[in-house]
Structure formats: structure tokens, C-alpha cells
Image (cartoon, rainbow, N blue to C red; front, side, top):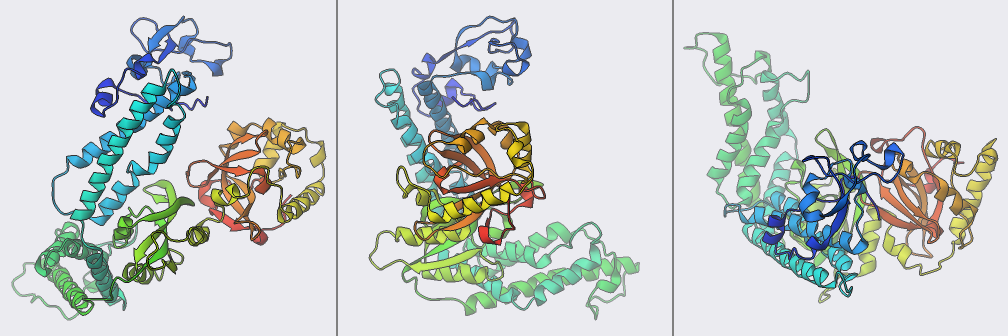
Length: 579
């Protein structure tokens, strides 16, 4: 069993009962724990090494404890040492998923009724239970017929199904309360039309120069604030006056008490007479206040004109596939694309590296959606200066209930070239393709040219150090059976390799029309007997499985060893020769 520190969730009986879980099956799970007095529970020491147990557990003798009662008081250093039977682990994990999903649904149910934004829906959708439904059901299904855990697994499945049903009901209610897609696209198109010549943004930046210093950052973008305030109000069906007030409030929050720092940055001629002010500074502040309020009114007038001119639009027509990168659409800059989240997703979510989030990074993804023609056109035009953000695919045939699977996969490969579905179609016992065999031979030849590589002992720290910095490449065996190369990788400290961003050169696409690409990420596991390598794409994405028959080589990059230094993938032919 995998024992990740902190991986055993804390479960409370009251939360389980509230989520509809029968706790009788969970109360049968006991573990050996001990403690001194009324302190934390510890897993009794079973070895002499300091790494294999908590230092407070050295002299403890344990006794069976009901995990549901004791888990909250288990020492954080010992949580990773708690060992459960596979069936017990599956039940505990599923119970944690049920409780978490139930908490999310209850949080949504407590929200006040009223209009909803598509940006909020995109966030709620991304966290919805539907994305974990298949995984939870499959894992519980493995134990549904078990004599010891079958009844509990079946009841847990029922509790999970009830939570998913409630979650879907809340998503449907949110969609019903959100603005119509046609309204969202019309508002966004009006904003794009006004912003097209760039003059409104320049005017806003000129005003900002009068009151703000750019020494420590970029100036406040007044046009962007007006656009957000106006479009948010119009999206919710509010009228021109209410939209203008929303835009005024957006700038009032930033410039309501602002004092002019540079009078020369104010536009000429002045619109406020200087007479009657006690000082030039007070006149400048009044001039600026009149200027920014007039700027907001003028922007809103232009936006209303553009919205009227663009009213009506084309009929919805047939649906079309689009690839959307930068998923989920939860960032501030995604507000005018967030309405796309309401449309049905086809195919898996694929990794696309990381994206900035606060002071760190979060995983970036790409998905394929089926959207009406007008939405596909709007999304494409709205992102025309963002290369690859939206890729338009083929139209869905009239009368077809689902798009063609190959059309979906072809679009997904625009974002990430390796799809597990392609390797799965190779079948059991798949052999190495001529493309991979040739590339492997070239890598072995380059490796032999490096002096001293053959003197390194398999599984040694020397091999590990050379691998992670790119001075050595691991090349798999060509024969299907386990060979020397498989044994070599199995002997390396995989748990250390998780700490570095490595380069995995793989065969991508459906055979025979395949190509080679380099993927960046971390090696999480390797099972030599089955020939499966666990690989987590860079950016914090979950682990996926890559069969060895599709791997050309594994190596590192001495100059790019951190996640923010590498792309998600690169074409193999663009790379310099590797050892």
C-alpha cells in the first residue's frame, strides 16, 4: 500500500452521518496505536532506523483502536505509517470523497438566491463531484462482491451517488440563474469593439499617470476596470444606467480619494475653472475627479452603442468542437470566456504545464467542448491575440448525438501530444515501433560516446546524479521481456526522482501515424515486470501511466531543472543530440 504522509484523511462521524454514510463499516477498521498518557496516538516502532518511525513511538506498545475515533489525534509524523488493508483503504478513501463532495454541495445550497456569474460557475464546475465520479465508483466496485467489505462498499456507492445527484442539481440551478450565452457573447463583442482602436485604454493610462507612480509596478488600467464593471452588470441583464453605475463604482474604489501627483499629466484644456479653489492642488484634484468620471461615462456610451449595433447576431446553427486552453476559466482575465463552461466536455482533461497563481503556480489544462457556432466564432475572435488559446475544430454532423472520437483526440493533441488512449490501443504485448527502435539506437550510440558511462554501476548514486542533470540517458530494452535496462531503472531511487523535473522522450499519437515528443515532468513510479512508468506532467498534474514500449529515453536537463523553467512538451526533432 502507498503511504503518503498526510494521505489518510480525517473523518468525523457527524460529517459522515450528515453525508448519508453508514458508519458501521468504517467502525470495523482498527489499527495498532499507542500513546503516553493523554497525548497524541502513535504507530508503535517496528524497526531501529529513525526514518521508519516517529521518535515519540520508540517505547510505546500499541493496542487495537477504532480508526474513526482515533484518526484526528494521530501524530502527523505517524499518519503516513498507518497501514490499512486494501479494502479498508478503499472504504476510507471513498468516505473522504463523499464527505468532501457533501460539504461542497451544502456550501452552494446556503448561497443566497439571485443571478449567478459564469466565472463563478467555472469554479464550481471544476470542483464538482462529477469529475471524480468514475474513479470513486470503479474503486468501490472492486469490493462490492467482497465478503468482508461488500455491504459497506455498496452502501458507500449509494451515498456517493446521492451526493453526485445533488451536485448536478446545483450545477443545473446555477446555469439557469446565469446569463444566456448569447447575452454574454454580445456584451463581450461590444467590449472588444470599443477596445479595438486602443484609444480608450490610452486615455485611462494617461489619467493614471496623474495620480499613480509606476516605480513599483504597472499603472492602474482604468479601461479594464470599466470593462469588467459594465460587462458584469450587462451580463446579468441590468440596464445601461445600472451598468454605468457599476463601472463608476469600480473606479471609485481606486480613485475616489486619489490625489494628483503630476499636474502636467492631466489632459488639456482644463474642464474645471481654477477660480474659487484655495490652492492649485485642490483644483487639480477636482479636475481629475471630473476627468475620470467623464471617462467612465464616455466609455459606457461607446459600449452601449457597440452593443446595440451588434444586437441580433447569427443563428445558433450546428455545434462545433473547440479546444480551450487555460482551463478552468477561473482567472480574472477569463471572465468573458467563462460562459463556455456551460457546454459539454468531450474527451479527457489534458495537462498543459502550469500557470501563475498568486505568488506560485497551479496546473494548467486544456479541454475540448462542443459549442454553438456563434460561441465558437466569438471565442476565436475574442482571443485572436492569444496564440493557441482557442483552436476551432470541425462541426458536429447534423443529427449526431456525439462528435467523432478521432476529431476530439486530434484537437487534444494540439495541446498535449501524448494521450494514454493512443497507447491503450496498441494492445497487450505491443512491440516497439521502428520509429522508437531507431531513436533508441541513436541515443545508445550517443551515450557510448561519453567517456566513462559504461563504468558506472547500475543503481548507483553516480547514475542517478548523471541522469537528473542530463549527462546520462536511460534507454529501455527493445525486447518486450524484462531486461538489463528495466532492472537498472528499478534499482534507482524513484522516491528521489520525484524531486526533479525530468525529460521523457516518447512516441505520441495513434499508430502508425506517430511522432516523437519530449514531455517534462516527474517520474513517480516504475514497475519493471509490467513495463509501466508513472509520470506526472510538469505543473502539478496527476500521475499518468506510460508503457515502456513507447518510451525512447529518460534523462534530465542541467540548465532547466525546475518546473517554471520548462514547457509542457517539445518536438523531439528540435532538440540537440542527447546522451
